[in-house]
Length: 169
Image 1: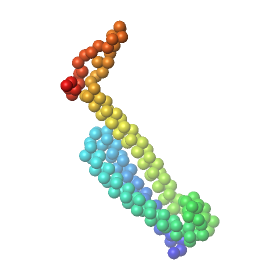
Image 2: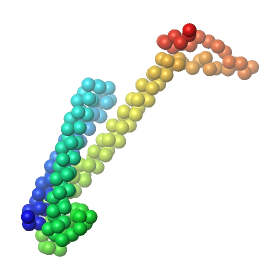
Image 3: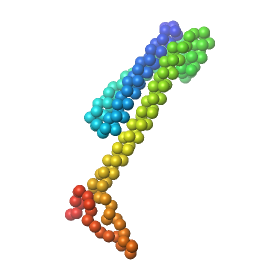
Image 4: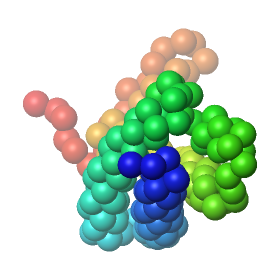
């Protein structure tokens, strides 16, 4: 297969991956709202949809790697040198137009960067919710902590716990 055709296939593969990541970005935006509203059912549906997209991304990544390997052989390059920048350099040396593949790769990088921001935001929201739940559980099981107060003489005052669960036997 000629290298021009392989470059076209590589570009198509990158475009597919970009579309999948854009779909994941959309879901991540929805996930932020769902986490804020503590809607567990909707969150589960979003996670399932993300898993499907991640499988598709993995499959497309495998295709992309196969195309890159064939392209490396076709251009006489090592597989390690088949990066977008290495490929663009090689194509420019051959006086080929690299506009399309550069635009697609820049778009893919932008989409992935947006996803990183969504991931950080959603991770912080989930951690905050888990910390809140942990505090509530501690209050319910342990009580409000008033039994751990010492008087001026250094003696601990014993008071009845103000928790919901009775631990006395």
